[in-house]
Length: 247
Image 1 (cartoon, one colour):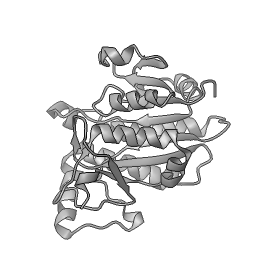
Image 2 (spheres, helix red, strand yellow):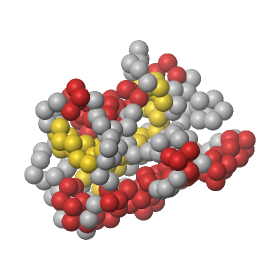
Image 3 (cartoon, helix red, strand yellow):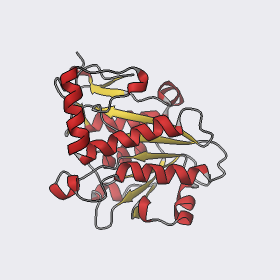
Image 4 (spheres, one colour):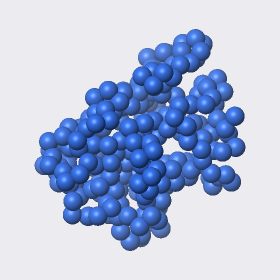
């Protein structure tokens, strides 16, 4: 890889994505920030050293363009999501997160990498990892079923996490991954840090907690900046909460 400690951030113009860009830059790594055409990042962020802004979408790149981009990276963070509008929730592309993730991983599988690329997916604590033995009450199971069938972004997030768990797995030669599951997201600067658990410790729908977006960004940057943190959570789906939201 030509750029040591170079992180590609997908959805870098989003509410969490721009904070991830800031935190990864603060760790000393280079950042390739991929943003939608017409989107902007804060001026103060654009002026930072080691930041390169790219415009477009993983789904619109040619195979050669995507392979060349990934060859520059040691890690990818997907902060992709759907805009909170009628068009963003119910319009195309309904499987933005899943399809982008699959395209990225398919490209990596055909590449000859010196060592596995590290991939962090921004997921949601509303995702239930059945394989790990996670279970919910019957009432919450009904609510999750309704979300899955009536709210396309939730189904998209589930499909993306399932893809990593079931199709990439934990022994892939080219890809290592962590799916980060925050609870209800808040803006602003938190007064406390973040706690991570192997599974949710409260009901995402019936007893939600909270996770400041700034804490999510710090947790993700910490995964990429610390070998110990990465090894602790590699191939897992940590549920993260602000410390004062832990029951």
